[in-house]
Structures are given as C-alpha cells and as structure tokens.
Image 1: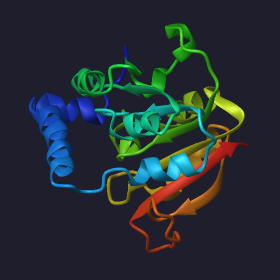
Image 2 (image 1 turned 90 degrees about the vertical axis):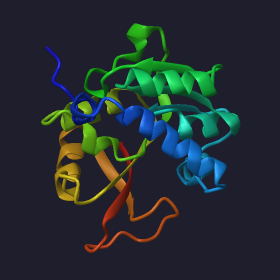
Image 3 (image 1 turned 45 degrees about the horizontal axis):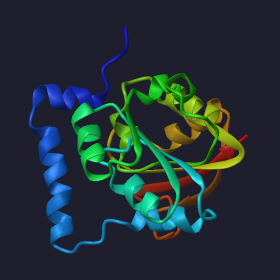
Length: 201
C-alpha cells in the first residue's frame, strides 16, 4: 500500500486546504503579483518546443505558463483537487493524478524522455516520509540523457538541503548548480531556500 504524503496528511487534517491553496494564487494573480519567476528561469534554459514535466504541478501555475511559452508540458500531482484546477485553467495540456514516488508516465501513454523536469513549490517537503530517493530516481528515469532537473524548496521544512544532496546522489543525479532564489542569487551556507539544477550522474 502506498504511503500517505505529507500533503495528503495535511488535507486529511484540513479538508479545505487545497481550495485555500488554489484561491490564494488566484488572488495573488488578480492583485498583479508576479507568479512566473520559476517559469521564466525554466524557459530560459530550453529551446522552444521542449518537453517539460511539471512534477508536483499543483493547479498548473508553472506548467501552464511554460505551455504559453510554446513548450510541450505534462503535469503530475498527488492531489485530485489541484489537478482539477489545472485542467480547468489549462484544458489543452495533459494533467495526471499520481504520486511522484510511483511515477510511470509511459504506462499512462505519455512518451518519454523529458528535456527538463521542474519541481517547484516546496514539493520535496510534502513527500511521504522516506520516499525522496524513490521520487528522485523516478525523476531521473523520465529524463533525457542530457536533460536537467530543477528543484526548488525552502529550508526549515523538515528536509535539510544536505539530505537532499545525499538523496539526489543516491538516485543517480548530480548537482550541477545551486542557487538561493529562482532569479539565481548565489547559494550560501546561510541560504534558507534552494534552487538546484541537476543532471544524470
């Protein structure tokens, strides 16, 4: 039986959490806030028409913007409510409900590999305990030989950056670059956020 993710546990404790999460970003967009920083970085790393997997896509904020920039995007998230929101806002894209620890898109009829896999929004801190290496391994298996993975998450969320680096190495990935923000500020020992660019080891 699959282990419950921390996101699912949060939803079980607060059934309205997903609706709050969706409405939060809708309100921020209506207020004119910039919600596309992650997508700008990913877009700058790729040629037009690249194949991108939005891993832990939520309501499609990052993947939807990347599709608007002419990339071929597929999104996966464990939360059906968030996937429903992504399908509503971006109906022309492929969105799948699934646990990243069990990711197998070819079985769902989605060809691989992907040129880039993005995992934004603190997804790594909401996984089921003990599954980070599984998630990173599945990620690598869906990646093109020269593809890259970009993962961003905050510190002080129960998943130390050093543990992440160890897990990435165990999954056959190597860190190519480290930043402290999506606009590429340097990563230092004092940084409380990590944006890591990884490739196959």
